[in-house]
Image (cartoon, rainbow, N blue to C red):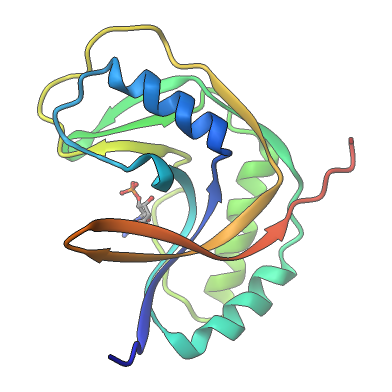
Length: 176
Ligand code: 2AM
């Protein structure tokens, strides 16, 4: 089969340790919806949807123009939103995160990509289509240093969904 288009998004990956810790903590919530697989946990920066494979070179070039700074990301809020989406959020979004998402989205829009019009909502989806409220438990408090952002390719088949990292770009760490 010849692949002509790819479902793509830019996001922040999670270090394995944090993904494992979040997964263990998530078990305590007894969520009844569709859990995001541990290896797929991430935070979306810009969602591109289905794109012709020929655009990959241009996307690499555009992402390379974005000059992001590294930052500590602290996820300390459990959020339950429309359609039973349960996610982790942050009470204090770092300025560098907002700038990175803003610059990335602006750069892509200026190149003609149509993106979500809603304001950027930093969140890490834990589960979708939950009908019951999460069980009360210990409040979340997960933190790590974001050092790079990634272009992910999303594939789905009967085995499930996988977000494959295609390319990554470092974030500047001037304070280290
Ligand atoms: P979600 O977790 O809030 O569902 C891969 O599907 C990633 O892209 C997920 O993080 C998902 O966000 C996000 N995504 C999917 N469709 C989107 C859309 N129309 N606009 C913005 N983000 C989207």
